[in-house]
Every structure is written in structure tokens, then in C-alpha cells.
Length: 440
Figure 1 (cartoon, rainbow, N blue to C red):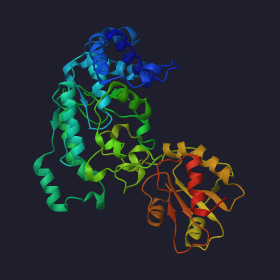
Figure 2 (cartoon, rainbow, N blue to C red):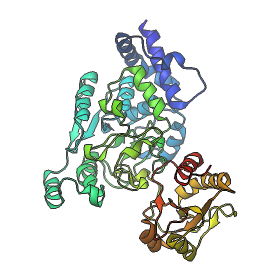
Figure 3 (spheres, rainbow, N blue to C red):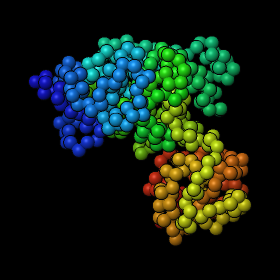
Figure 4 (cartoon, rainbow, N blue to C red):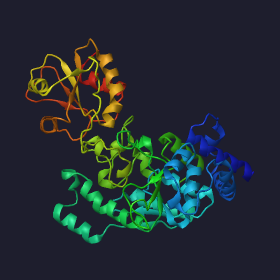
């Protein structure tokens, strides 16, 4: 009985993680009872080490992690399940690797580590501003798995200086970067100096605008580890290739404790003042730092996995986007005239940089939007803003590329409406335009 349940629980892992074409229906169905789920975990924990080693195509890595070809390891592990990737991390680094747990759905990492049957460590950043529900989840997780989370705190003097100088909510006025740096990034940097590797819950689908460059394992490009210097810390992202739905299927099947805020519409959960629920069809990180530009929704913990497209990199030689006539090209004078009004047509304009990878990702969707709106009273246009950043920032509040703005028909005096979402597919853009312009 226990072996059968263990097989079912184990089968559910690669189904959720690798999107293979096996059915997996029994594994993804809710367990019949709490007792069965407990038996499944107990049985799996005792058997999984042998099963993982048999299932994994990646051979055990050499003892000296510094000699590993991590780019090659990432390529080999990319098609593996989160369980196999987790086992690789724990087998390679033992007590020198730890799971970074934020109190959200990355609790899946703790369950995967438990299923390997290997010892594991978990740490968490307590910023002092977390939700009560998050603190309660920490307690539940410790009791559920019989572990002690290693809590890390910011330097009291730095927090005190920041709050005394700027108040408790300065991030609403000048951005979240400074507060996150004091409360999260610096404590994390200090904690990582005691490790050779760390394991995070990053997924590519969490924020399509900023988290697409997330390999399953890499040499950490930002932080340093126990031995010091570049290349001294390895970063694992076992959940990188799975979706939110697959992650939640796994959590439900295994009966894992989760944050009560998830039942209230919260998806991505951080500090209480900077987190709110998201609406249906919003990207999950749109509930974080909602008062800031969409592409700035990172705290700095994973800055090495953010593709450089935030408007801070230097313009590179690159072929122009939307070279056909379907998207009208505007120069500075033409855009100024449109902005000043009056306007004969509604016009949506993409403020872009041809070298920006997010702009490149937008190219087919925006071209499709132009085709859909062809012949309507809405013009679809582009303006290369990287060569006119000061103008674009002054007139349209440009901070990152791409920025989409709608200039409504008949308006004048600088009126425009900025597109507010990270979702930039043609269907969503079309719906937004039609809602504002009444295009049938």
C-alpha cells in the first residue's frame, strides 16, 4: 500500500515538472485523505533516493564543484524534473547548500527536498515587514517537516537610520530599491557568504517581463559564496521551467502547508506594504510594488536573472523593429504634434529600443495588433525612444522599454494614457484599445 502511494506521489513530480506526454491523472488527483498523503510522503522519503538516481540521466557530479561545467550541467538538467534538480543540488553540496524560502508557493522547494530523503537546510529573510500569515506559515512548515528555518535579519542600525530619515513608507515616493537593499539584499548577501550554493523558487512565468533568463542551475552572477570571489556561489532554480498551475497541482497533491493569503487572491507574496492581491489574468508579480513601472518589479535578490532591458544599458547596433508599413514610424516632431493635439484618430504608440529584448519579444504581438486594427479609426505607431530618452521621459514618463501609450482622438494639451500591464499579447492589447476608444 505504501509503495503504491509512493509511486503515485513520485509520478506526479515529473508530470508537473517536465510536461511530458504521460497521463499522470492519478498523480494529479487530490489524495484520498490526509493519512494517505502522510503515508505517501513517508514511503517516498525512504525510497526516493534510489528512484531519483535511477531516473536521472545526469551522472553524479565530481566532488569539487569548482571543476563542474555549470553551463553544461544546466543544459543537461534543463529537461529534468524539479525533484531531480533538487537531488542534484543536495547530492553535490550537502550541508553547504540551503533553500531560500519566502513564505509563498516556493514551499514546494521544501517538499521536493523532503522527497529526496537527503538532509537539507532552509533559510528565510525576515524583513520585519512580513504579513502575519507569512509568519504563521513559517511555523507550520517547521512543524510539518520537523526542521528549523534559519532566519536572517537586516542590520538594526541601517533600518533605524532609514526609517528615521525617510519614514516608514518612503518607498511609495521614491521607489522600493533602497528599502529592499537594506531589508533584503544586504542580509541575503551576508548569509550567502556561508554557503557554496543556494536554491530559489524562481520561475520563468512569474514575470514575463523580467524573469525569462532563469536557468535551472548557474554560477551566481551577483553574489559570492563561502570561498569568496567570482564563481564561488552556485544558484539552483529547480522550478524554472514549470508553470504556476503545475506548481499548485504538486502542492495540492502532496498536502503541503501554504500561505493563507493565497486564498485571498495573493499570488506573489512579499512584505505587507508592498504586496496586494491580483485580478484574474494579471501576471502574478503585478501585485508587487504596483505603483512602479512593470519592468521594475524586482527587489534585487535575483538581479542576475533579469535581462538587461530596463533602459539602463547602452544602445547596441540592432536591426530596427516593425520595418513594414503596418506600424507607422514617428519622428520626434510628428510625435510632438500628436501629443499637442488636436488629433484626428486614436493612436497607440510603442516607445521602444531596437536592442531591447522585451521590445523584440513585443514585435510579433504589436505587429498582429496593427493587422487587427487596420482600417479602423485607431493608428498603430512606433517611436524609437532610446535616441530621444530625455524627450520621452519628459513627455511620457518613460522609465523602461517598451512603454505603450494611447493618444485619444480629439484630445490636446499633452493628454495620453499609459498601458498599465505586463501582459503585452495582441489579444490583451486589442481589448485595452477597444475599451478606451470604442472601436468595434
